[in-house]
Length: 508
Figure: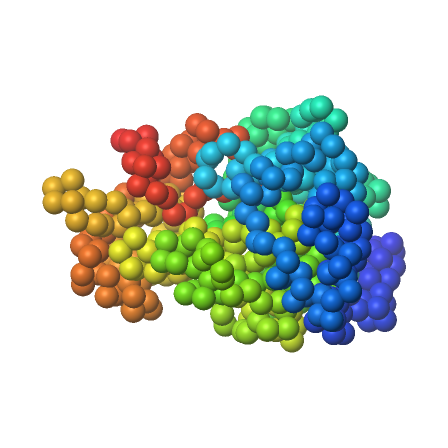
């Protein structure tokens, strides 16, 4: 009998019932978070420059903050403030950050350095504990609470710099694991610090028989590759053959639905799948209840959020934010509208544009879904395709063609023969075969059916689609040319013409 598991489960359920993690008044909670951020940073260089002390005296601190402090992207924040913070204290947050998270997103360009302070690590752990408490909402066996948790992260072997350490955010978080997690965390720091992805996964496969894994966490693309390695190395039929108590998978980083069929094919029976919104800049949202993949925004955990409508009120047709966009706080957002997310955090990020778009699906429950990236918006000829619509097209393709497209990329390019615009798709198959012409027809028909702007574009400037089908491993090989495998690395869904040309040339 899982005595300790029953005790832990009972404690979680009691805590969740008596002290709910979610705020009773989300709008008021957000004002409190902003006030605490401004108060803490009022004597920093940034706080003095923008008169945080004066903002705290305003009748509506949220409106005053919005008017006084401009929106920042990475370039402006880094060039004007964060670079100084690597050498000097009290620039955008008290003291100097001990860590910087390297984040290149999906562009393949030089890595960004996002500050990670002790307060930010505490904030991330608070959100993590809130998600753990929400396990009380799920029908999970008591035995689970005694089992190991395998977190597939980037390397925890951080690089030492002049007074700070740097690496991907998941590696930084693992290196600062709370003590209560140390006994159940797998694969352990020794393996997590192996820099080479293939070597790290090989060690996981070798050690897998000695672990009793009840929960998994990591980006789905790399999780699938790791599970396949464990199954192949240990000559299994499925992953439950070796980890029969596996009950929960915490996904994140990219949309899960395109990977669902492949992931579930590696299991013996269904498990609970929980989504998370964990970025280099913070842990913003998590799945808090069953029967939905929507995530509860962490409105009461140390961060302040604002929202720019991802339409003509906030962006032009190329996905570039307007000089004076409409900006809302939580009080003003509406369900069913896409917003670019703006964050202010205890890492010294102020009105910082993450680059993601979200949509509230239940404002009362504070629940959102991620709908894409502000720049993952294919609109060269007015087709207005968001990442969400592209993901859905692939999901429909897999359902109707019986295919297993695991990764994909799409971009607008010109036909060599006449200079007319087309959409070039590259589809990465997990297994099996897929006829390119069939894929073209199914994608085109679906997008015209659900997106009137795309349908209009197909009758005018968008003359055709072309589809190239390749094994998914070939796409990862292309990614590996400029990036390390695993961790937080994601394959770009939308490519510019130059990058798309490079991909096609690589694939031959």
